[in-house]
Structures are given as C-alpha cells and as structure tokens.
Length: 172
Ligand code: AMP
Image 1 (cartoon, protein in one colour):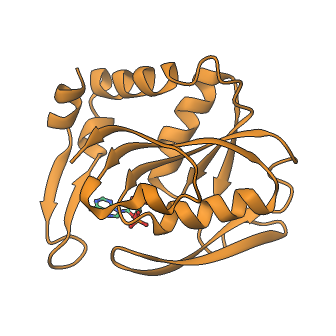
Image 2 (cartoon, rainbow, N blue to C red):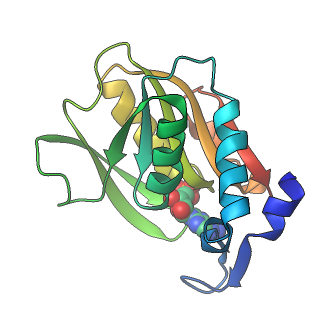
C-alpha cells in the first residue's frame, strides 16, 4: 500500500533549482484514493496518543496537518512565513535545502503541556522542522512526534529534531 503511495509522488528534477529533485506530492493529493489512504495510515499511528494540536508547516504541511487534526479530533496550529499571521508571534530563522527563511507562530497558539504533533509534507535536511521544534518548545508544548509524508533519508534531517522522534510514511 505504501509502495502505491510512493508511485503517486512525482519527481521533478532541477526544481526549484538545479540539482534538487523535487518530490511533488500534488499528484498524491489529487488522487482521492491515495489522499485518503495517506491520511488514514498516518492518523492511525496517533489514534491513542491524545494529541491536542497538530502544528502544520506552511504550506503543504497545512494539507496533511488539517486532515490529521480532523481525524484525531485535534486542533490545527499554523506555522507561517513572515507577514502572514495577524497576531503577536514568535519567530525562528533557518536554512533549508534551497535558501533561507523565517517561520512564525502565534504566541498563544499552544498552551503549556499540550500534546503536539508537528506535521509537514517532507523532511529533507531538517532545518525547517528544527525551527518549528524550537517554536513549539518556546511555547512549552509537549512534542509527541514529528510526522512527514516523505523523508529523504540520506540528508539525515531526523537528527536535527532536538531529540524528538520522527515518523515518515515514505522513504527515499
Ligand atoms: P528541510 O528544511 O531541508 O528539511 O526542507 C523541508 C521543507 O522544504 C519542506 O517544507 C518541504 O516541503 C521542502 N522541501 C525540501 N526539499 C524538498 C524536495 N526535495 N522536494 C519537495 N519539497 C522539499
């Protein structure tokens, strides 16, 4: 089943710049059977984990994050790029596979001790997820795990999650 989901992801060589093979999950998301299967398998892992909130990372992390939140009866918290969140924020800057960026979270998005699952489409170098881990830790959320549809194993991103566990549905 996971192998079928892997087939549904499209490789785009040299996007957004030369040397990067972009793992395009839009082809998985646009197929109803694949999308439902992805959400079902990922959410099943957390059914008994009493997750309070999912933290979704802009933008593709919102897709998987919102679907998991609905399935788990959890809230969805948005981590966004600069200038998008309207209320007071905390921010973290980070390097990613292709460039540099800053991410923000609302200062009141997570209450101390809430059980948090961080969600994104893909774990590459781990810089993005590392920044989000720091944001959640700043709000004293209890990080249960970081969940990804895809992980690029050889980039070793899971080592950068501040000692927290990572789960990925599909590995390359
Ligand atoms: P990183 O911070 O290096 O772990 O990069 C993860 C973030 O960048 C995720 O939000 C991904 O959506 C995006 N990303 C990085 N590399 C790729 C890739 N090869 N294919 C698709 N998305 C990627």
